[in-house]
Length: 351
Image 1: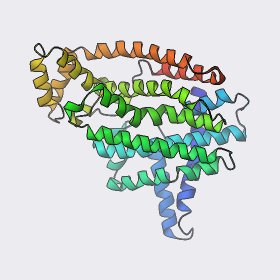
Image 2 (image 1 turned 60 degrees about the vertical axis):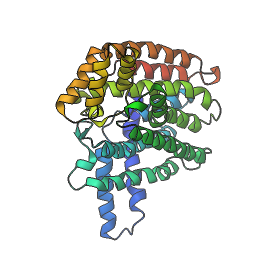
Image 3 (image 1 turned 30 degrees about the horizontal axis):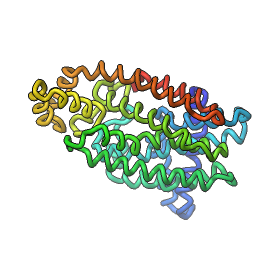
């Protein structure tokens, strides 16, 4: 993964040039508007794409190299596929800009959210649209003539549809405590996180490698990994160190349907008489920005021992995921060590 991250970092430099180029090409090159767009796009890219963990693009590159071991470093072919994979980081930034606005977040990656920067504001919404709308142009520039280019673009469109539906479920669940069930949470996570975070990078690698079958066989493990990833994000929102995560947690005051909230309600409702006062406190405090009420929810989580329970869940569920990885068909068995390594790095992550 470390070697792939280095490749992605290098590719992002070229992808930035392509992004700035395709957007500004829509305007006359001799006008001041051309320079204005170029400046904005460079600033947008540097402040929202650069600086992430690049886990999605790295997963894609790792998978491509596993499926095509003949690809060598410093070759034009490898550079091209790395640039294609790096578009996943533009997609990630598109979602994060919109998500931060909807959540009214303060920080992202240890810095002010893009929409909170001076001179940006709600124009960040249009910036996100620009990033999304030029992804396919960059893919076509990175992989001109690739036999599966149209499939690659279609995979992105379908991934985006699922993610937006997932985001709808997320926002529709806010403060709707009666809907905080495992069925709702699992469906929401599959759509808003698992597909674009894990399955789409794998699907992209398979398509680039001209492996057009077995995508369904990969989906089970991919969705499980995505579930682990999102549940960890939920955990870190409450228990993580903002200086490490780069984000100030707001799930409690935002009234979000999270792993912690769903499990807390499940445990409390399993012993209604014993937990009656906790249920009442939860309903009265959850979704409030009052610091005392936020702290009350955290105390309920502590009383229910959710921190310890989550760590047990994390260990157990990662073992279940590795069983699913072992079931991936032999014909694409090079994926197994890639996914095993990805899961191992996830366990006990703190950011």
